[in-house]
Image (cartoon, rainbow, N blue to C red; front, side, top):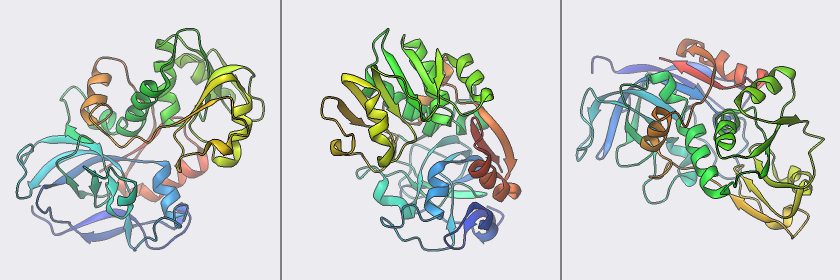
Length: 326
């Protein structure tokens, strides 16, 4: 290490993305079981912005400054005591929640960090959410995968899609949706995907969606609804599109309750991807290299333009990941 300070994208209080700032902070130090990573790339995600705008304030009251960032790719520059699986110079990538969001992490092997939208960050070493980055997977491609790719693997495992089933994907133009659509198509699903623009509809069609629908005009008698976007108040309209005995699976936190659906003749499932062995960093890397997972990158920003990147994500609803390079 040749520096004691670093730049990071931080919130200094609750507010809109435009109120974020690039701040100079002390470089964090790794403790036992932790690694310090020089970040090459990170991303902007819905959780980043929902946390700093106060969306989870009833669950956690943030201390500021708060460094954003969940996904990362970079190089190990220091390993804390007891770390044997990584050494200085190793290329790594993965997913870790900022430490203040510990309540949402795996209770047994939590993947936590000091915030990945920074020049350096500390991560837990003993978690399947972090892994060595294969040389064939460049940092930008790798950093786009952990959330969208891992969630796609988890949804496919839970949904058990059968060939010929009609699947309505709500929130299809987010990074998860754009990663999920090709996987559903490969499973033989008949896909109906939500889209607000002609550009989005064309992209979804190219990825395997058979047709698109507006958010206020869902089809009827579908076999499966995959909710990637709606909060609880939107679930009744989604559930009405299901045939009797159909399945609704949501990834939106907090987990939905059956009473919120407005009907009792359908199945309800919930997927919360936390990066376990079957959906963690190694699993998504293997799936990507095998051609089974790919997450589109909409735009790239430098860390110095991190506020613009966050604002772009919030205001322009990009079709794919916003990647921030460091």
